[in-house]
Length: 503
Image (cartoon, rainbow, N blue to C red; front, side, top):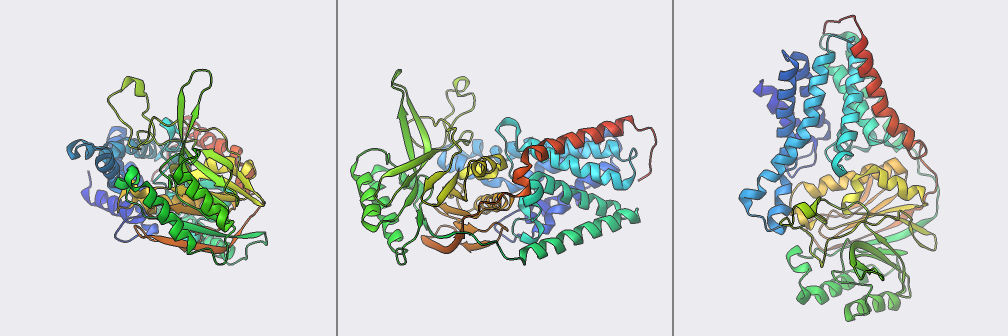
């Protein structure tokens, strides 16, 4: 195995995805480039599988090192047992890289170089889709999300979405790799890459359409995760969010957003803390959206179900709507196959295991129709699609990234939110406990951005409430089916082809 190539792939993946040192988004393409090179130069399919898996496992594990933090620090798992967790996750994700490398090796002499690149690109996009779908899905380190800090490269999301755009990126990468020996591939790679940048620049320089606008205030409390659920600190938490919100009341915001589980108690109950929150809202006549746990009692069985929820309070302090998180975090909010593993505990505190919600309808107040995405939900394109389909004119992501500590994860998480805003052509406002709080426009520009582990308030007065639907939204289902279908058809065609080509 070529160690030099492995180092290049590792550096490309590390610096290409968000990290704490320096983020160079374009470097991410070194990762698929090395996998393609490995596939082209492997002596056998078995070698391509092995080298692709080792390369993918190493790169994914390095970028996901932060998984250790919530497992060890908040799950109370001893570090010798927590340390393998990011490695095991990386080894799983490495299987997708392994399949990609092996199929590139298999196709290398069965297709002309330009078509080989297209097929490999579609294969890459399809494998990212599989990664984001199978076993509840983990669509995290994609090529598209790596490019989120460079908005001119991601405008295609509004037309084809995350996985198709990754397929385009991968195709251009393979063309450039093959361009060393094929002039046509080199030309195609340069022309398509340049065209993508020029078109993205044109879109970014065109003004946003007129639409009703609102003033939104986002509050980042920076509450210590180890104290947040301690009853002794609950009143201090309420006072801190009220204090920070008071700083943004002149002029009066149209909406105030507090993070996921900002209120670590049951706001639905008539308790002293809930009365303080509702009284503050009523006194200042502001609508408030806040994260809080919720429970529901089954009248017939007496069983209690718990949810990770968002409550929308009107200026009278009354609950007008609530949303229960739909896509829960495995092992964080529930334990998959928990009845078979009773000794495994979930990481999130609370009185019982959370149950998922099933209502994508927006939370409505006057002209606001808030499409809710709690924490992890923002990484799933399908969920934001459902919220906008149900009528959301503003996407809202509330999160508590304190679980991740001071690591790459909060920034990687933020970049997922950027993709959702562009795909759906909506403003997305993001309020987090410890960062990164942000306002993102439909072109993927972060108009206002907070920092990690600081108390802060962030207000933006020109959040526009769009109703128009993007091409991707209108043809979402067809595009989602077309990608794996096109890939399978091309692979089948490769199998049936008799001519052989030299690379």
